Image 1: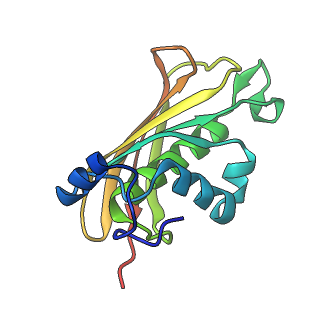
Image 2: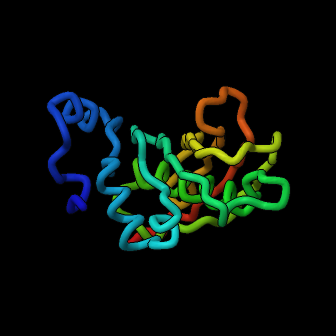
Length: 160
């Protein structure tokens, strides 16, 4: 993991974005390492970072038999966990290496029955304050345009 907001960025374009406060503080590799060490259950579930921007993240998650409920559909707790990790990543992409940020509230709406195939979660921060961040997450089945779930949530960001 990088050492913080002053650590090297990936490219000169990122340097310009960072100067404007628009580059992600974490890279996808940083976030995946954080999951491996700090949230091993998410890492073991196969959650990986596909893309990361300033206040945004896209995660992927394979679906195994362990994540299915009767009828062969992906379980609600599986989708909720993916959405929560995605919002955490979006928060850290703006807040930096404040790994103690925690979910203070999250609501998920299941929109349709997801097939037994990998999931994608796209999270974005709607509002970033000093101590709270509010965002939304859309979960899709891989290769499908219509979302299977939509979540909104608030993360508490400890300072000092």
